[in-house]
Length: 156
Image (cartoon, rainbow, N blue to C red):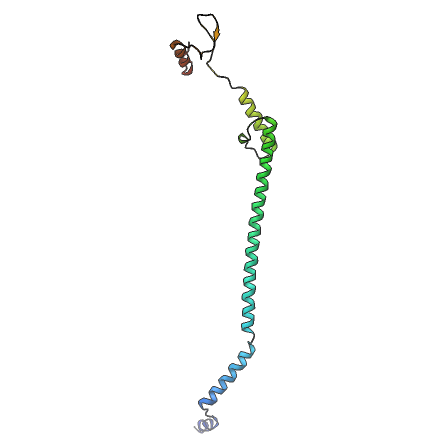
């Protein structure tokens, strides 16, 4: 107990004003350590904004480069198709190839198909006058029956 009384004697009492002063002093020292915090925070925000703008610009540039490459490819294909079309004498719209070799192969196939087209089942007939005529002029119902039979697979 004697020790407790001795410790009580060594303890100092502080008034509220003294405590406030001590706390204010401590806070001031801490604030001084981080005095440039607001400035650094502002700089970081500006840097982030610049970085965002830079990223947006980079994304836009990438998109435009991709679009330009696509346009160049489309123009090259159109040019190839126009050349082959002109050389072969066929409509450009019929060509779907993306290089000159495939367009030339398509043009040859189209020309081969077009030259082979004949109207099947049209034959010349003799009429009373003894002249040869195609089935399209002065036809009779017998001629139409014969044509229908040929169209629907009936043998003569």
